[in-house]
Image (cartoon, rainbow, N blue to C red):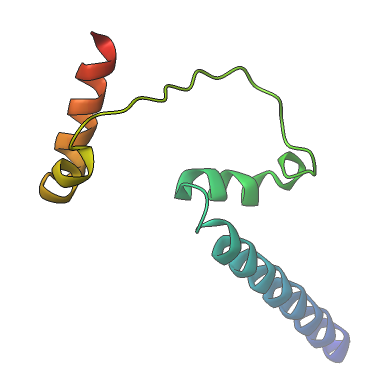
Length: 90
C-alpha cells in the first residue's frame, strides 16, 4: 500500500514539474512582448490565449515632434510620458 502512495506522489511531482516548466517557458516567451500582469493572467487563464487574438477598438496617434529623439535621450521615461500626455491633450 505504501508503494502505491509513493508512486502516486512521484507521479504528482512529475506533473507539477512539467507544469512549472511549461509556465516558465510561456513566461519567458511572452514576457519579452507583454507586461508581467498580462503574462500572469494568461498563465492563470490559458483559455484566453488563442490564435487570432481579440478585436478591439483603439485610438492611435501618430505625431512628429521636432527634436524628440534628442529629448528622449536626455529625459527619463516619466518626463517623456508626461510630455506625451500633455502634448496630446492640447
